[in-house]
Image (cartoon, rainbow, N blue to C red):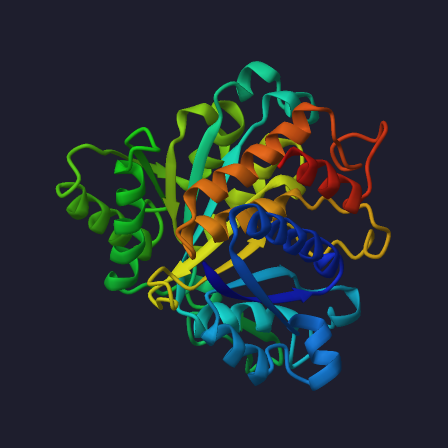
Length: 363
């Protein structure tokens, strides 16, 4: 297969971890006789510094023509001015919107050999293997109006709008139902909302109940978001597929990272309606961690989350399931052999590139 992959490394440790993910994809291409062409572009703070825009038009046009996009991370303290008109995160939100990426998939799996890295007791972590399906283009992050107003008393009122349309809810729920019904899952779907308070959540719950009749093999459960947050740390193995709206998904997936022992281990895939040249979804693939400016340039960042994101790229945007599993098994093999970066274990920690070497050797 010939595939065109756009790499937007971004800020902080983004360039370091995307470099390692590209190495892993090159190794897969060599082993399975594929040709992957990589095109590098700016996004986030680096793009602001170079062009004045967090998402330059050149980057956006390249992404729209690609078969997949691999992203590092955006942001850093040098761009944290709350009064700034342009922020690095504008680039991330902008590319998600332009590529019509409405679904973010975040698989959470606890590796047995890393159970000791988690603050949770090992018996709680046994059998944890679930995936969070997060709605990505609606809710508080995109609702309008989003503004500040000066009151008559001279004070300031800030406004964010939580808005969802029925079609936005239906398409993310349908994807989650289909995923829960697939052979790789256990047929259980937990729909997370705040229906006791929010009108958008009441609509969400109504639509979930309506769609459930079309998926008789799936057991649907409604869970309030605060209860879901509690269950994630008390009995996470009960979950199979979790579906929720944008803000709740953002928070819950970061909480779920604690289960694995490090945010550096978790990948994500953002999918939408646009199809690439292979007929698969044009997806955006990124680790769930941030730009980690405190360790940027030190060569100690964990590349696994980005490498596993590359495996999701192979699976969802290129249809290369066997290649995706091969890369995932290589990561698992490297961890089983004791390979660790400092975020997992300070003892005998490997550098970013050394960890990748261990994974490539396992290929």
